[in-house]
Length: 275
Ligand code: MTE
Image (cartoon, rainbow, N blue to C red; front, side, top):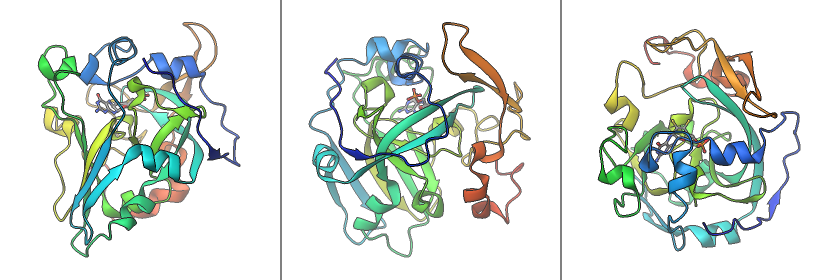
C-alpha cells in the first residue's frame, strides 16, 4: 500500500488513556468489503485508491456540495482525539485518532430545519472491494455499507471524522481517507471510506440493522446492561500491549465511558427498547 503521510495536528491534552499499539490497530480490523476475517482488511485493502477522494454532502442543506478530502486534510486545523473503541463483538481498543469534528463540517453546508438525521455511505466499487463482488466474501451485507446518526448526535463535539491515527493518514484497512468515529457507540457505527453524507428528515436505514434487526439497533449506544441476543455486553476483551495474549478482560462502561458528555441526548428514551 501507499505509505501513510505525516499529519500536522493539535495534540490531545488529555492523554490519560493508554493507546493500543499501532500494529494491532492496523492488523485487527472489521471492513467486510475486504473479507470477514480480522486479518483480511490489512491483507486485501492495500490497493484501495484513496487519492483523489470526493465527499458529497447533500439532502436537507442550504448549500449542498462536494469536498475534496485531501484539500480538507491539508487545509484544516486537525486535532488528535484519543478515544476508547468498543466493538459490538465485545473487544475494545484505545485509538489516537486525528480528525475534524463532524459538526464543524456539517455546519459549512448549512443544515435546514428539516435535517433530523444524517446518513453516511461507504464507497461502492466492486472492482476494488472483493466483498462487494461476492456475497460470501462480504458477509452477506447489502452494499454499499450505510450508517446514520440523529442530528444532535452528529453535532455533538465528540463525533469525529477521522483522517488519521498515530499522527499519520489512515491506512486503507482503517477506512482511508476519511471515516466516522462516534466513541460512545459500538464500532460498527464508525463507517469507513465515506463518499456521501446526506442530511434527512427521516431515520436512514443502516447496514447491520438491515442484516439483523434483532441484534443491531439504529442507536447502538454501548450499554453493558443490554446484552446482544447471543452474548453478554457486560465486559470486553481490551486489546493492549503484549503478544497474542496481550489482552485483558475489563468491565464495559455505559456509553463506553462517555456518559457524562452524552447521556443527556437520551434522557427521555428507554434504552432497552432503543438499543
Ligand atoms: N465500515 C465499513 N464500510 N465496512 C465495515 O465492515 N465495520 C465496522 C466499522 N466500519 C465496517 C465499517 C465495525 S464492525 C467496526 S468494529 C469498525 O469499523 C472497526 O474499525 P477498525 O478496523 O478501524 O478498528
